[in-house]
Image (tube, rainbow, N blue to C red):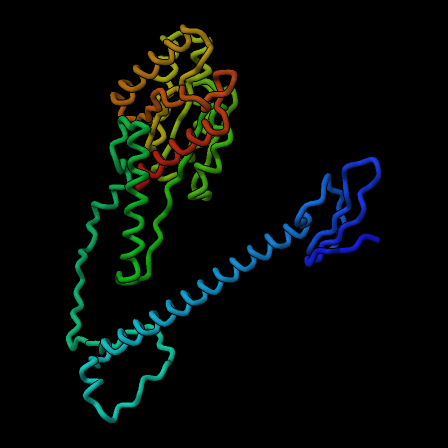
Length: 357
């Protein structure tokens, strides 16, 4: 055995023969470790981690204690502010409180928010009807369009949508204060949207606001002549001034000449005038990778449609080149993607809302 001449708890053992290492015990946990040489003081890695964690815990405890003191001060300030505001509402100023020798000390109590001002009731209530009797001539106004839709662009449609949303907030605020009376529900106008396969998937957006009086008639692969033939079976004689939105012409630009497309639109216009309806024609959407001849023909058709609709007193919805933006046309350059279909449906829905309101 080797005598221990050190006062610290570190223990030394003989060096291993043939090597310059020694087994040294940790000063904290007394675990042995093989070191290249005997050190004056040794602490193992586990004990060092434990000491580090203890320091961290102590710091966290100090922070928690500080936060608790801050929270107590905040509660005290809130209570003091609430007491002062309560005294101001009741008219008790600090001077009056100090001058009252018999006043009891403040007692904490829960106070609910309420108005302490007395209600003033008017002795005279004026009742006056500010509306006049409707004249018989107003019954004929339903036979005329509510708005001139001779040329509506997509930008105008979205501007009306933003104005409607902003005015809706004001209307919702004023409705509770308005005089309530039993409303008479007017008869809803029938809305029909008819056209080619580009209308597929737009039913939910277009018919969502009123599924009972709105419908979308999608005719896949339809041309202008096909829509003309189907109109008689779709619009009923009992419909009172319905709203009819027509979107067709894309398939005609693939094979028909510009003159034939014009003749087909003119035949469609003669059929539409027999229906006693509010008519809006939607412009032909642009296409991509279908040849410069077809793309140029679509531009010429839309330019002619704009003038022809104004001449025939039809509404015209001009989509412009909006659908040439990235992500709206499908890979075939003809149909619409899901995003494009949603944009197209919202354009038609906003136009319908503008026409009906």
